Length: 379
Image (cartoon, rainbow, N blue to C red; front, side, top):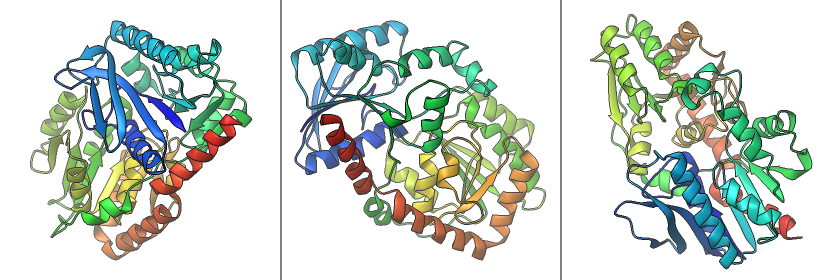
């Protein structure tokens, strides 16, 4: 098959969860003999064409100086550039990654320029999450509702929770939605070695944006430190609330307990830090899947997260980690303390997580499932 993927940015120039996911899928599609193109925005000082592991990567449209930050005009220019590209080039499958790439792909489907067009949706905004409204503005939900109701042959999403929301809130028929979980590369993860684990260490990996609620985790550490003075929190990632979080650390006098690593560009460095930690915590109130939880479990690490979105499909409570009610800082601190003090139980939970990853969340299985969707799509 000749496959075209559309996404805002692509690795190695930007390595968010969606970008890493597409890279892992695309390179395996190439190995299976498919001809794969990726369309993404231009980035300053990056060539317009790259061949990455056999993937033809075309940077088109506006030139972005500092990904992922883009203006509405950048979005419009990209939409036009992609539409023009799809008018000139025919594909067996066009797979647009939410959310802006959905627009030109759907237009090509409406006008029958491309016959087999799929929309891949990783996450949805939810009205109940007030922090999400503050970050994106009140119009976010309505923009998504418009985009996600655009016509596509099929929709792929990453969890049953998101499938249910798309059906119940956006009116997309269930028979058009296919659930394909995210995965990890176990061979790569296993190849990354560390000498020692940092005792009593907690790690957060993700964007520093309001709905991730890293402030809850910092406040939980302020409670833990009374019982475990040497506790360490590693925060990997960057975002618009980093300044607020650094101020909170100073106010709580946790400068010796909390370290901001910023964004680590090398994925291996992220995995290395996870392996050196004892527990990973994701206090987010909005997650389509929770990729970092799978990555931690793949490293034999237990995880703790709020009962949010697709997270409940990753964590089996009391097996590979703990699920807990949102925004309960005291309970969060108690769960973390329990794992730090009961290292044998934490180790067994990590083993349970690894087994689940091997069974459900590996990229080769993911690609097989997506291939099936494409073939149904073609028929």
